[in-house]
Length: 144
Ligand code: HEC
View 1: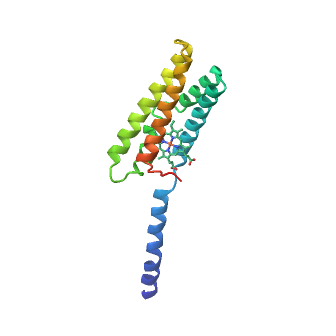
View 2: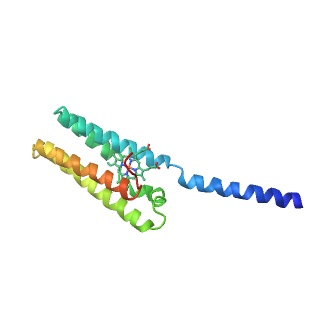
View 3: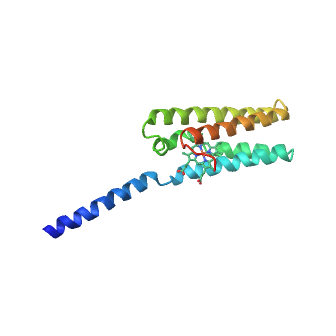
């Protein structure tokens, strides 16, 4: 009996340590979405730098490929980054999602209907600011 209690005392902290690790572990689905977002954004940037509309539009399609609810559907994972204020995490995700969608639409119409190519860089900047805002506030990333 003594031995059993001793073993339990030794194992329990290990179990809890394991649990905290899983909570902090990166979320694969969220990371996949993020990788698609950054690939889309990079294509938009390449399109701007090489003056290629088609490349910008391909980037726009990639951003759209992330589907509806591309951030909010990762709500559970995102909330873990801000356990003290999960509501803020959710509203931030919702807002970024709406903004990114609308800036992406703007870029598309700047190219296809307005043919105002100068404005594409504005859309690009607005999108990257959305990414950065969340990384800084929710993910609390710091410059290295
Ligand atoms: C609502 C919050 C939020 C927004 C908006 C957001 N991200 Fe992220 N991003 C995160 C979080 C949280 C992580 C950390 C994911 C992890 O490691 O589990 C992350 C991670 C990343 C990573 C690293 C992925 C990896 O494999 O380690 C990249 C790249 C990235 N984001 C790109 C972007 C781009 C590009 C945008 C904008 C188009 C964007 N993110 C917008 C929250 C956000």
